[in-house]
Each structure stands twice: as structure tokens, then as C-alpha cells.
Amino acid sequence: MRMVIMGPPGAGKGTQAVVLAAALGVPHISTGDIFRANVSQGTPLGVQAKAYMDAGEYVPDGLTNAMVRDRLSKSDCSGGFLLDGYPRTLEQVEELDSVLAGIGAGVEKVVELTVDVDEVVSRLLGRSAEQGRSDDGEEVIRRRLELYFDATAPLTAMYEKRGLLVRVSGMGTVEDVSVRVLEALGVNA
Ligand code: AMP
View (cartoon, helix red, strand yellow):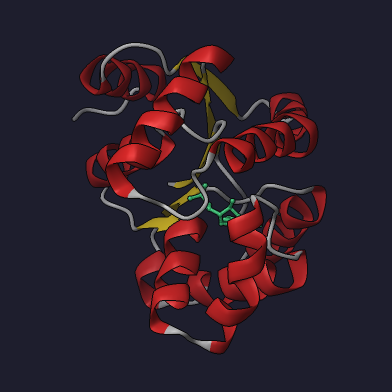
């Protein structure tokens, strides 16, 4: 199963992605996690990505697409994958299509977690206090949300047209949302 999970920052995407990837038996590929790992290891990619991440901006498509292309070429992705936090721009949607077309495949399902904006702001502020992420200050949180709604949320329409989009409410407990996601996809936990 080649899948994508989308949703605004604070929607619980990462948490649900872990559950879903385990249920599907595919690798969970979070571009945010890969970028954070590069930043903490001080790799050249991490050095380039850090300023964008700290400002709540998207890392440029060239860097992001090269990283994802490389990750998807690994053998553990041959039976499928769950992408979390990618694609986020039209160029990334096109890149993913072209990478997959190269192996005669395509995205099979896209889950969009929907949430109430006030709820995600309070979740993100809570997470900021707990984890001290450098991109979780209030102003940056607002920018990340704005960017999601302006640049990324409209992309779901493309997947909807292709008949691939499954919208699931991300409100409620982690367990409630997991049950909803798995049911919506017809996956047994
Ligand atoms: P996330 O953990 O998915 O919210 O990602 C954290 C940060 O990493 C984002 O705010 C961006 O700066 C960067 N990032 C992650 N995924 C992407 C992507 N697909 N395109 C551009 N930037 C990304």
C-alpha cells in the first residue's frame, strides 16, 4: 500500500502515522523526522534545512524532493510506504507522481486528518511546552498553520478528484482517531 497522510500541524498526523504504518506493515516516512535527524546530526542537509524549519517555512522543494526520492529508492519501500508530511506543495505532488510512475505505480490512498483550528493551536502550544521544539513558538506555530492552509490543504482536492482521498476527523483521543482511520481504510489493527 502506497499511502500519504495529510493534515495541519498539531492534527496528530505523526502519532496516527505510526499506528497506521504498523497496521499496514509498511515503513513510516516522516519528512519532518528526517529533517530533524539531519539537523541534530549537523549534516549538510540539516544545516540547509534548519533556518527554514525554525521560521516555520517549507524547506525548498529541490532539497525535499531529492531527500524523498532517495528514501523511496530504499528496498524497504518496495512493498509500500506511508508518507507523513509529504507532499506539501504542487511540485512535491508532481515529484511523487513521477517517482512512482517510474516504477509503474501511484499513490493508492490519501488520508486527511481534519481538525478544529483553535484545537490545533492549543495542542501545539502544549507540545511546545513539553518538548521545547524550536519551531513551536507561538508566532512560528501561526506561520506553520497559515502555510498549511494556504499551500498544502488545497492539494487534497487533486487527490479527491482522483478518488483517493479519505477524510477523517482528527478530533478526540489518539485511540478514537486511530479506530476511525483504520475503519475508514478498512484495515485491521
Ligand atoms: P513536520 O514535523 O512534518 O511538521 O515538519 C517540520 C518542518 O520540517 C516543517 O515545518 C518544514 O520546515 C519541514 N518540512 C517537513 N516536511 C516538509 C516538506 N514536505 N516540504 C517542505 N518542508 C518540510
